[in-house]
Amino acid sequence: MSNAITITRPDDWHLHLRDGAMLKAVLPETARHFARAIIMPNLVPPVVTAAQAAAYRDRIMDALPQDMPFEPLMTLYLTEDTDPDDVAAAHASGLIKAVKLYPAGATTNSASGVRDFARVQPVLDKMAEIGLTLCVHGEVTDPEVDIFDREAVFIDRVLDPVRRATPGLRVVMEHITTSNGVDYVKANDENLGATITTHHLIINRNHILVGGIKPHYYCLPVAKREEHRLALRAAATSGDKRLFLGTDSAPHTDANKEMACGCAGCFTATNTMSILAHVFEEESALDRLEGFASLNGPAFYGLPANDAKITLTKGDTPVEYTDKIITGEGPVTVFDPGFPLHWRVDG
Ligand code: NCD
Ligand code: ZN
Image 1 (tube, rainbow, N blue to C red):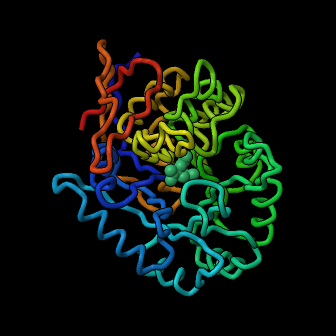
Image 2 (image 1 turned 45 degrees about the vertical axis):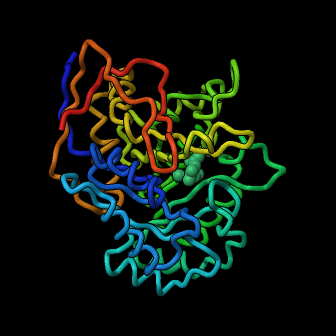
C-alpha cells in the first residue's frame, strides 16, 4: 500500500466563502489546498448581476493572503428578473463560469430564488446557446414533501422537465445525496454532471440524530439513509467523469449553529483532502482521487486542469486539525469526520 500520492492540485466546484470578516477567515482554509473554486452567490443580498459578481470577486481577491494563489470562479444567482443579456455578457467577458438555481426558500439565503420556472426560460435558453452551466440546488420546497424525499421529487418534478424544455443546457446537480441523484446522472448524457460533498461520503442521518442532535452535521440537502451514503461513495470512487468534488463547505458561527433554529451547513474546507484520501483508500480507489478532486471538474467546465500538484502522505500519527477556526464573527467548527485522519497534505 502506497503511503504517498501526488495528484494535480484540486479545485472545489461548490464553495461558500461569505463576505467581510468571515470571508477573510475561511478563504485561506480553501486556498491552502485548492487552486480554484466555484463561488456560491447566496450572500445577503445575493450576487445577481455581473456588476455584483465583479465586485464580489474583487473583495475575495482583497481578502486573499499574498502568498496564496487562488482563482475564484464566479457565479450569478438566478432570479425571475435575471436579464439574459447581462448573463451572456458576464460569460463572454470570462467573469462567470455558472449560474446558480435555488428554488425559492430551499436553503440558506434562497428567498430570491425561482418560483415560476417559465419566467427564467429565456435565461436558460440563452445559457444553452452559449454553453454556460446551470448549477442546481436540487430540492423541492413544497411543504407537503418530506425533507428526506425532496431531492428525489425535485428530479421528477423540476429537473427533468427543465432539461427537456432546454435541450443542450449544461447542468450540474449539486451536492447529490441520494442513489436517485446518482442514477439520474448515470442515465443521462455528458451535458449533466453532479458534485458530491465530503461530508455526504461520511455521515448518514443517524449521525445527526442518534444520541442527541448534532448541529454541526446538519446541512442541506440533509444527509439521508446509509444506503444513500454508500451509493454516493460508490459513485464518487467509480471514476465516472461526470462526478466531481464540490465540498459545499458552508461556514456558520457556532452561535448560529448551536441554537433552537440552527443554520444548515458543514464547514469542511480545512480537512477535506485528508478525509477524501481516507475514503478513497478505504474504497481501494486512491488512484481515482485525482479524477474526482482535480480532473473531472475542469473537464466538465471546459477548463484546463491545474499545472500545480499536491502530495498527500499517510503517517502513523493522526494529523492534528484545529477543531474550530477563529473568525471576526465568532468561532466556526471544522467538520469532524468521527475518526482519526492519517493523510496529510504537503504543498
Ligand atoms: C448552504 C449555506 O449555508 O449557504 N448550506 C448548506 O447546508 N449547504 C446553502 C446550500 O448550499 O444549500
Ligand atoms: Zn452550498
